[in-house]
Image (cartoon, rainbow, N blue to C red; front, side, top):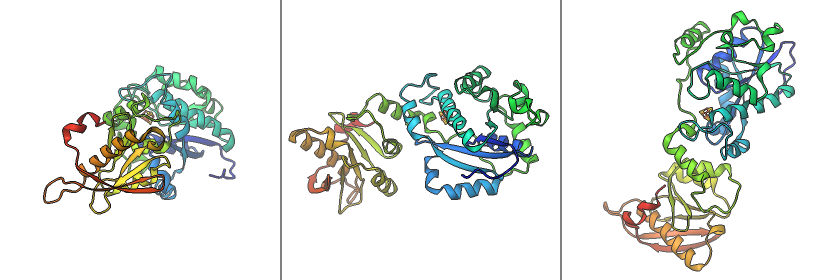
Length: 353
Ligand code: SF4
């Protein structure tokens, strides 16, 4: 986004898209300050928005009068999950370090945008882990943003920031909200003419018990992977389909429907092997990094046969029965047609992730 020519002070907002961040932007904009909102995305939250950023921006502009920009934080975030300094919440959510990372990135952007201060929609005491007073202090301290991080919804319960001390922002027109209740926010939304706002919750898969546990096990080295670096596409794959850890640690992903089958094609890498049934509806399968991780003819035959057996097992039934079928294997540009019998459930029960 281009910095607009303006004499007004500029605030950079961390924008989640939830009501609190919408309100934070509007409270500051009401004081005649230009608000530039930033929405960070990672494979764990809101990454899909990147594919239609302009529609998203237009939607937020139309509904709330807010200018928002998406920034992909994937690289730093994938590393952060290896060992967050402040640990995890109930699931695999490193909320404190997540916020510190976002604020650090926003702080870097401040100079570029000519912004005088940062704002967030945080509310004191609203979330158990990341919005307690002591945690908010840690977040400010570790992101070195104490003097210029303003939380308009709870500002009156906090020490004045530089923007308030210097008179850029009128502290009397900020708020003193605290706790988990949302009534004051809903009332304020009405007063500001904000009608159509999202309900809280959802959004971050790192708080979803099932997906978070799968991601955590992935980080723990669940699959034979052969490289230190994880790709964004590895996480896109982890969030869809059925997953199996085949003997030898090989990672097999099966699509559960046509949409997932298609999505998997986008995430395929050159060293993945792909299997599907050419003449019967069924799953697309990816043996992730198989070209690198499967060694020797015997291991190759066994692994491919197991994968083909699962493709047939989850394929469309014929006359109500799971029957044998032909599976096309694509390995680094070469194709082979295999005959495969469906694997009995007892044979692969232990492989399901
Ligand atoms: S819920 Fe997810 S996006 Fe939100 S602070 Fe925690 S880790 Fe970050």
